[in-house]
Image (cartoon, rainbow, N blue to C red):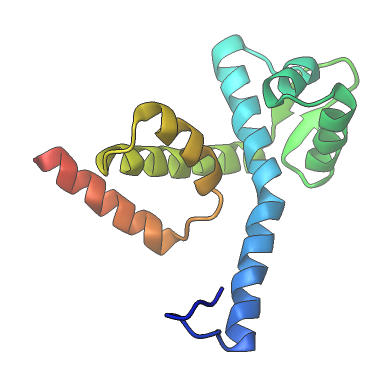
Length: 147
């Protein structure tokens, strides 16, 4: 992450940056799954593995492996051939992820990004934005609303 205009960072600082990115990547799937499961439960009354896989564009076995990990980590409960349910921990993460996603989406709209692009971009950015940056996004959104 250096350029002629920007010198190479201190190795420890650079390692911290990459560690933060790795941690965000590890949580991406978890956040996407719990948010989708919550959306399915809210709109359809249940979340089933087949629909989770379909909506994520992956195979049922792949989705099943992730659901098993989410169950092991305490985010969901599920039994074979039954619906998937969020635990309190899973619901809390889904709500937090959705809120982050909404802030990023609204910020992108506020700075003039088209709705379609904002939908696409906010899906990835939500996982990597710090709380400090989200706070600035909120301020900018409020300023745009006042105009």
